[in-house]
Length: 538
Image 1 (cartoon, rainbow, N blue to C red):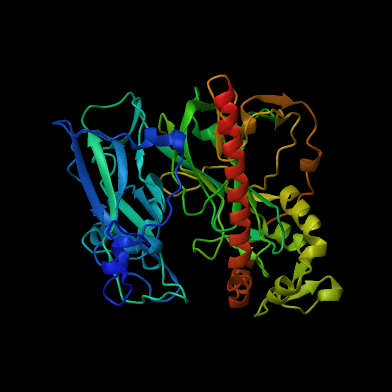
Image 2: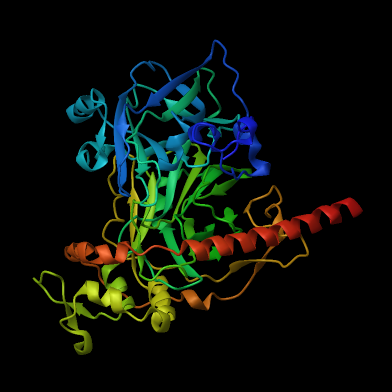
């Protein structure tokens, strides 16, 4: 903590130090090249603001998580307006450590359930699952560390009461940690501020979510310095949803939790991999915001989009699972694009159940058992699924596990704004593409300080080792088409076993993480000094 004024007479007695809620100012990471996102908006007769805020939401007193959903009825937009910027409204700095993300969704229709919920102060999202089924279009997304987002001059998000009147805001809170000193009960009234205008931009903007469906089948083994997960938006989904000229992606928000180290947003066209739309080589779970691409990237009908996440699980003793809480992991890319379409709002995938079972050496589960038990192979028959996950030798079997999960069948999950699957995609098995041309960065002598790279106007990427990009034509042997296998959703009851308390309680080592972070920070500082000296010599 620090303060502008020194303690009185150098004293450090009780009552002489500043209020921690006022003086505590932790370090703030920023993207130095992304300040365009924070261009201030000048209010005029055509530009106004609206605040959507929570009402006295109790922050969990334990280390549990809370997803709080508040419904708003916005029927004042009798003609179309465009949202041109949004930003967080944080009630108190002391609440920031408990705010993980805020997402505003557009809801389709005007059901009685939505009307009733809009008259309440909000409720736990777990108690509003039925009402939220029609709320599947993301309007705005804020994560811890972000200051908001300003749209480019050519696009804005449409607000039109004749198209949508109900909007749901989901706020993800994390509770007090076990080592917290101040356990004073708190409530939160944070939310979002939207800037909107009657001066319409050229394009309506939309948000497309690509990645792994938050689900227990997304397994990250422990003790590994590099675990790859891939969430696919398959060709059949973009073919049916995207307009013929394609969509133009102009910003991305890439999300993982604590173990995430890198994220690549890949694009495949006709079995040829194009330059990644974006690549973050220095993921920070506490700083995830939209980043503008230097020039919009065209995605055509029939393209495949892939969110590829790299994790470091060396600090864990047990597996991590995909899910919505801060203890779980995620792999998502939220992409802002224009022109907006409503056929496809979330395009995720998840490994099929047979793929997951095969990856941990299970051939068959016993039917009708509780807890779920293994039927074959004989050497592990009778063992529960939980026991298998807890005792599996990940050190020996990790490579086989990674091979099967990346090559095995997965379920595409292509959902529309009405939260319904795109016809023809809900009962198919899909596979990683058999590429004939893969993208690799050309080695350069450029300064590489990590961070985010994206398409440049010349088809390359900006900064770091990706300043010059070329294709390397070769067969991607690691992604040959795997054996087929069917899924069986009746086995979803095993999620309870997979999410056992003993598995989820495993946490990374704080000392190890802090040591690695310090070493990386020192290395980057040295490289940065070298870079500055090099620039001075030019």
